[in-house]
Length: 233
Image 1 (cartoon, one colour):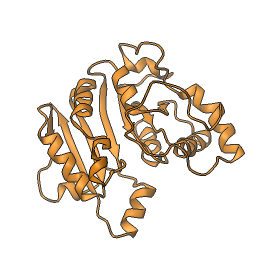
Image 2 (tube, rainbow, N blue to C red):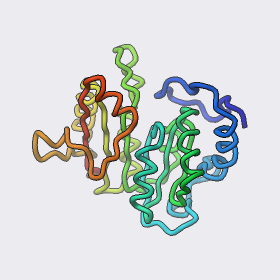
Image 3 (tube, rainbow, N blue to C red):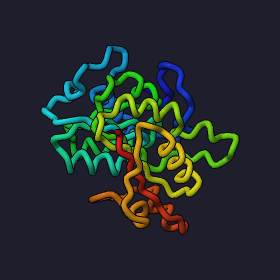
C-alpha cells in the first residue's frame, strides 16, 4: 500500500485534499498493518445485521463521517464498548493519526473506511445504524462550492434510509452559514426533527463531549460552535 489513493468507485467529491505531509515511516508501517484488518470491505454485500462486522458482541452500530484525527471516535468507542463504530475518513494523515492511537489503545468495536462516505452509506442495509455523527465537515464557504457540502437533500435521503427510527443524526460546526444551511435542510426533510428545547441547546456540547483539535483552533480564532441533533422519525 502506498500513500496514493486506491482505485475504487468514483466519489461525489464532498471532501477536499487527500494528503497532508508525507507520513513518517512508523505511521506508514502502522497504517499498512492495521488498516487492512480494520477496513470495511465493500466488495461483498453488507451483512443483514451490521453487528457481524465486529469480532466482539455489540448491541448496535454507529457511524462517524469525517473523523479528522479521531479524537471523538476513539473517545466514544472507549466510552461505549458494547456499541460498534464505523469511522470514515478519506484524509490520509487523519487516518494515520487514528491508527497510531489504535496501535497504542486497541478498540475491538471499531471498523474503518478511508474513501467517500456516500459509498458506505449506499452499501449499508436499510435501518441498520443507531446514529450518525458529522462533526466539523468542510464548510465549502464559496457559493459556487455549496453543492459539495455533505449535508444536502440526497445525503439526507441516504441518512434516512440507513438510520433506525428513533436514532439520531448529530452535526457540529463553527461556521454559521453551514449551521443555518444544515438546519434548513434537515427541518425541510420529512424524516428528521430538530431536537432543541431551549435557545441554549444548540450551543451546548454533547454529553461527555471531548472536543477536537479543529474545535480548539476555532475557539482560539474566536468562532463559536453549534451542536445540532436531529431525530430520525
